[in-house]
Image (cartoon, helix red, strand yellow):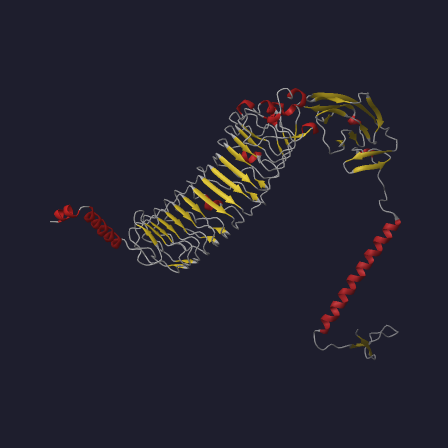
Amino acid sequence: MFAEVCGQQGPWALLLLWCISLSAADLSWPCPQKCNCRQDTLEVNCSTKHLTGVPEGLPNNAKRLDLSGNRLKTLSRRQFYGLSKLEDLDLSENVISMIEVEAFQGLKNLRFLRIKNNRLKIIPVGVFSGLSNLRSLDISKNEILVFLDYTFQEMGNLREMNAGENDLVFISQRAFVGLLSLQELNVDRSNLTSIPTEAFSQLQSLTKMRLRRLTISILPNNAFRRLHQLRTLQILQWPSLETLNSNSLIGLNLTTLVISNCNLSAVPYTSLRHLVYLRYLDLSYNPITSIQGNLLGELLRLQEFHLAGGSLLRIEPGAFRGLVHFRLLNVSSNRLTTLEESAFHSVGNLQTLRLDRNPLTCDCRLLWVVRRRFRLNFDGRQPTCSAPDHVRKREFRDFSEVELPVVFICRQARILDRQTQEASVDEGINIQFECKADGYPPPSITWLSPQQTPLSSVGRIRILANGSLEVRYVQVHDTGAYLCIAANAAGNDSISVNLKVRSFPRNYTSPYFSDEGWVETSLPPSTNSSEQVSNPYPFDAKTLVIATTMGFLSFLSSVAICFVFMFFWSQSKGQIKHTATIDFVPRTSMGGSGDGADTGRFTMKLI
């Protein structure tokens, strides 16, 4: 009968049947008031509806529930108990300050939970009970002060947790117990005063960690022990971080390390030396002034090195020697004037080079870069000459092949005055030897001692700022030939000077230089005690009188203090007799026994 009616009515009957089925479906999938529901995606959207509580009548088979941007204050126990199919729950940007224990009980299929930007100060143990299948948890931008022991113990499948931008001051040692699968952790902008090493050591599946805007000034030894699976460590925006201890990263097998926007003044070579799996190193925005030679060679797999926005003045020859896989160097926005080819193990492996925003001097030292200007990737930012003046502000790509031998040139270092310098002097005086040189680029001046050891700008024998050598308070063992070397990228030049120091006779009055400084004496110091003249009177008469007087005054002061103490002590003992009567029998002038003689008496007053 129904088929006959459909056949007679045609498409109108089909449309009627579709409307009836749609109405029945709507009746079976209720939607709370003020919320928007989509049955096709099983999504309930209650975002920014000014709700003060979780709405009632939520469909039991909903997979996504968005309650963000409302005015929720509290989540009660088993608040979402009937939503066993729920996979994604967003509670962000509310005013939640309290979550009761087992608030999420029953959400056995929940995968994503976001509670960021609320007012939580503490998370009681048991709040996350029942979330055994949770994969991602975001509790950032709250006011959480502490993570207690076993806070996350039932979240064995959690892979990612964002706990950044809280007021964290302490993480208990067992706070992360149970997070057996956690791979990524962010603890940003907290008030931690030390690395919670014991807590982190529970996260043995962790592969990525980000620590941003902490106030810790030093990274201690064994800071991340037991994190053998950690591959990416990001330490960002620690303005107080100045030092990494030598074993601070021990035990890690990192492939990516970022220590950016901190206060490191030098590359932490000793802390990095064991990171043989490291491929990506970023030390940008630190006040590092140089990259030394032959100290990164143990990072055998290093491919990228970033040190942008620093204070780099020099990259020494051999800085990247031994790095056979090195592909990218980013040293933009520094104070480099040049970058020599000798800094690299092989420039043929180099693919990307960022040299922009440096005051580059375009001479022979940069010729190797210009010749590769069409093959190297400058990441869209061409290097620019700052000197010499006639090529100032010109980009490398603007130079033609004809110009290269004319512009990118150097002139070998040459010592200007090659006149022989010899000096024969007595002990104790100061002397200087000059060494002036010319060349392009300006050569550096070094001096070698007679023992062929380099001299420095400090000490009794030192190199002055103008390149001269100064020997102060010359001594006999300073005798010898000193070598001045002027060097630049085009070559070296050298010249030697001779110094001869005459010693004084033993009976000659002369000053000498000792460990205590410059001493005036009639004889030089002697270690032979038999040659020393002993003085039978080590003190003069004036010294003896002063010492005796001071000793006598000290004695009188002590006696006076004792009498004063005895006087006050006697006053505290009650009634005191101030007179004493003494009877006595005087002797007879004849020397008798005195029997029957008159007795005498006198009275004595006590003070």
